[in-house]
Length: 202
Length: 202
Image (cartoon, rainbow over all chains, first blue to last red; front, side):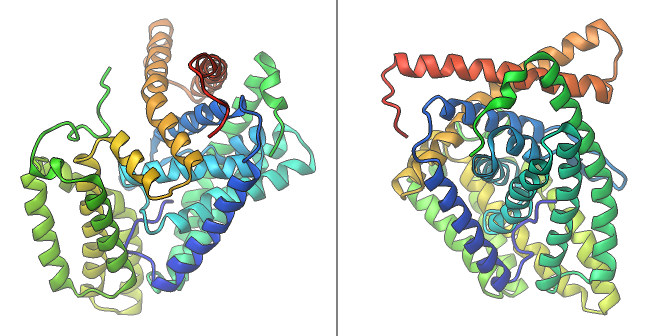
């Protein structure tokens, strides 16, 4: 869920933007001396993720959910590259479609980008298989929904007894759909074009 | 295939379009930061909204398009209204949050829909926004149309060959194939960039 502008309190805004700023800075530092062949690859993968995010599935209540593709990039390129890519896609989503906000970009990046990239990579790295990638997708989706809920709670906008179950159950569905997607795409790539999976993970 | 559905009003001409991008960006950021960090009363927000709608009409952006973007925040509005009902807080607080959020969305829409995206990226660059991020953003913007075209072509081909509705399995294969196509495209782009004298630096 991308939190729009105007829903968070100043202390949450400042804290989340600070954390995101540090992570983006670290990522840019890590990526400073990469192989130049990797730059167009990262660009086109960012674009791929952005296209993936525009596919929306309607759910009950008139709202729709969409895939994030964070764990997919994290598994393909590594956590720092993936977090930079996701930062760009979230920024563009906020700019062009108003999904999420500019001021709450830090909070959304913390929920989706950082948790998805780093926790997802950590879980996948235990045993580098497709099953663990889809498990990582499921877990990160639930964790980021919970985190989003706590941010809204700390801003005194929702009560946990309402927010937590709603977010949890709606993201249960999202998590299941997305983990099926990640499993499917990874097995498709493995079958047809396996050397995409062998990039250096940064 | 429609190609300008993201910032379709940015190529119009009006007094607002002619204002320097730097001024527009700085004033948007001032509005957004001020509203998010300081408690603004609903009366001031309504005044601001009237002013913003006046500007948007000066820029010839259709009012229905502007109003339709408020649906993005509806799930959150629903969530906080239920929470406020349980806490027995007054309805005017919910209204305040909605007005805050919509004021930022409206000012962002005016910025995006009256500015060419390349100008915006140039301005970001001149404000010391990291060059690597600008490069990735321009990559996404440039190839978004190419990739959505490919998705359209492939889904059209699938529909011609089998059924009307895309199943999850075909959707997975479609995106897997899109990933492989994007990878191949990245290699071509890399060669083209080297041919055009790109010096491997960001």
